Length: 290
Ligand code: CP
Image (tube, rainbow, N blue to C red):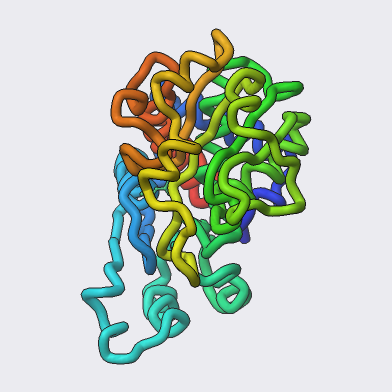
């Protein structure tokens, strides 16, 4: 049975196949093999982009979509995550799309669930479809990955997007760096000073400060963060001519990104969101189509 749990399980050939398939979805080239397949989206952590782009993707493919909202469910009566998922498994769906704040939540479900599991984000570990949409956006921009320089800036420590992207980007021969406050550093990655990154990178990928995962309060105030690490118009002016700005979003205007930078000429943030829909169509089709 196919699952999509983490990108480190996927070969570069398979990843490129999913990106090619996403491009076909973008131009409407997909078959009818997902029509009437029943898919259940189970988001145990808040989501706007991932949840609803999965839903739009599934509906474009003709699936029948069930959305499970844990906070309006028997979870409130003490039912566990595992037991909730097994409820849906008892109805024989064709796929389960799951997000949880627990790292590798899927391990308890493998060999129990009878359909593909698509990981829509687990704790601080993996966010495979986010990485795929980031890669699609980069490939559309540069037509390659090899040799591109990227700095991921911000709360690296708590970011499943950073961890997933750095692993796959290294395999794609991209030159990967992290930057931002030292309290969010992960010593296993190469660190670059923010101002140096601005003038040297092809891609600046910003991250939100993920307060919900912090055990202690961030040392910097939001204002201090913006002054030191916020991408302002003045800092954008230091970037290379053809470089781009990415952000998985949600973004916090006035913290890691200035209001007037969100939709500036270098920003690909909303393009990433659109690509998310095509990537999730491709992933759904790969998991449950022919
Ligand atoms: N990028 C991302 O995962 O956004 P959501 O949390 O809104 O799904």
